[in-house]
Image 1 (cartoon, one colour):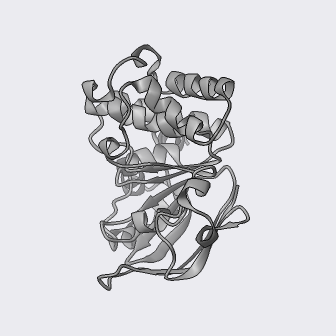
Image 2: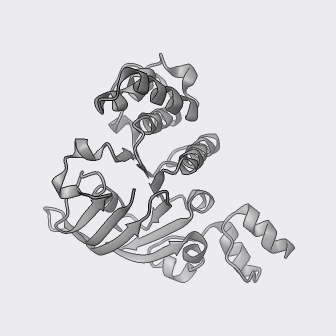
Length: 265
């Protein structure tokens, strides 16, 4: 399902002009990372995708739906949003109830709800924790519950807001596995992230925002290789990318596999 953004402008009531004429197309099945310094407009932008914010001017289409003409609850059938802080999202007494709540709320029949919940629990390694209260789990596991609760809704588009913040290496690997699985299923996955290494390892397209405008947009290697331009929005390329530049690699590398290939060449 495509996302089409046309000359999107947004100002908060206090007068902050957060988005300044953004136009983008995100194709069905793309894996897109949105980067930039705090205040660049990243979260403001993606909150337009599920109707949490409405354009001051311009438009956002989710498939053929204009977001100004559909409620947040309707858009939830197409766009799943995992908040940065899972505690803003969790409210059920058990993990199992939490993960099943979304598909139930969408009106799916019992068999489909059970199937979707079971799949989401397995993908996030929560199958043995279904009877546990989410707030009896560590922050890292609550993050996985939040992910599972959105995955279970089976939306075509899934948005992760800073998914690796506060997560240890093991849980970052779990989240990367979720992204990979969703990609293999043809889902559109969008992340807002300051974790540039996670971005480089898991996303093929990178959009860099600065002061409410698109600064760079393209294939990850192309964008992450533009160190000087990224620096204007306080984003450093991955360590391996910078090392490759210092070693004089002809092509930009963004992960260990590409680095080793270039080194051998």
